[in-house]
Length: 162
Image (cartoon, rainbow, N blue to C red):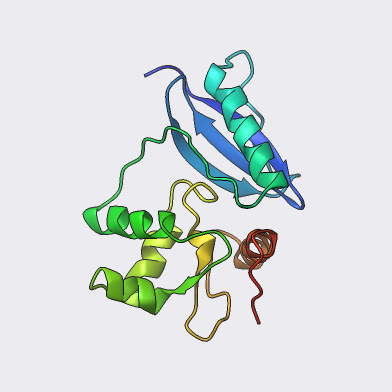
């Protein structure tokens, strides 16, 4: 494993902080532009420019499919949930209940796995919504700020939420 570096990618109203090394992305976190951690300077990898290129593509074209190397850990249940989430096409959502029925789980357990998602945007947990076509929760941290991000990502991908 090489030394980790962090890049801050700007979306409208929020930052995505991506931690990676030479070979893999390990974690991504949301931050307000004024709360973002500084980038790690002095260490830049080829993967850094590829992450930026692909995030630029996604920003311009919400149908863009990320093709980046990830490495992360989770429980067996979390890994199953994250695999389901990665299969939800852009422009579509499923409910926590529907996701739960796919792996014989409970909606709250799906929400818990979404909250532990190490790679939001890349593993698009924003595509899981409440059964009443409401946003439900999103990520951890400041729920109001997080829900603004979820709204932006879904709107960017062409999803209309009541």
